[in-house]
Length: 100
Image (cartoon, rainbow, N blue to C red; front, top):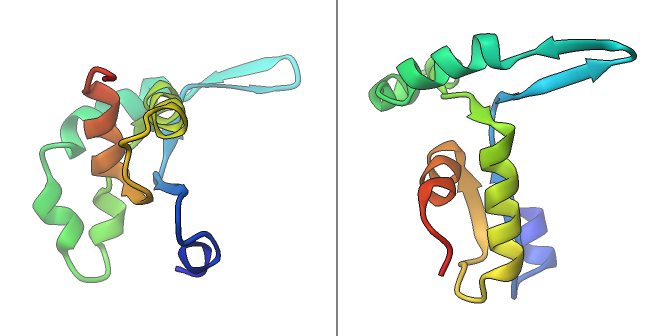
């Protein structure tokens, strides 16, 4: 909320929980999509579980890195993109829409 007060006329804050893609540590590549992709598929349909007290955030859907960068680029280049906070469900929704 402090960021929104600091930049009242614009800016997008993305709030993904777990971002998956291929992560490199030195010369070792860790394919996080092996875990993240199936979890995303299952947890996208479990929105009600995310509202459970205390344990709800554990059921938040992972997000592909590609979806995060698509929303980042769209927020930067699309003049009608609304400023504010974009949660996991918003990231998934905006990343699937065609840019205007």
